[in-house]
Image 1: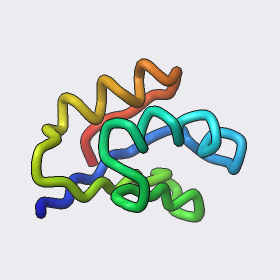
Image 2: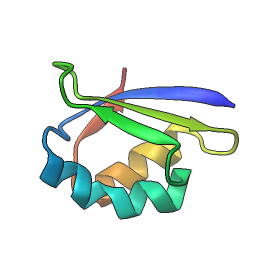
Image 3: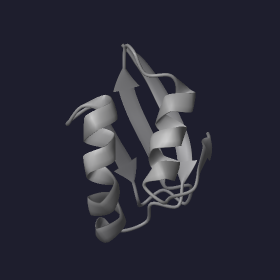
Image 4: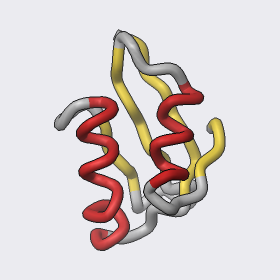
Length: 69
């Protein structure tokens, strides 16, 4: 398993709820989390198959900004 981290603008429970279906489909439930207490709103994804580009595209498709941490 590799761990990918990204800075996002996912900053509240409502934002997490909005992006949950997309990330659950891409990474699988329980394989990702957003640290909204961190100033960078760090998204951490654990996966064997996903690339950083795939995660970034999924989050952008859900309407959020994302960049590599």
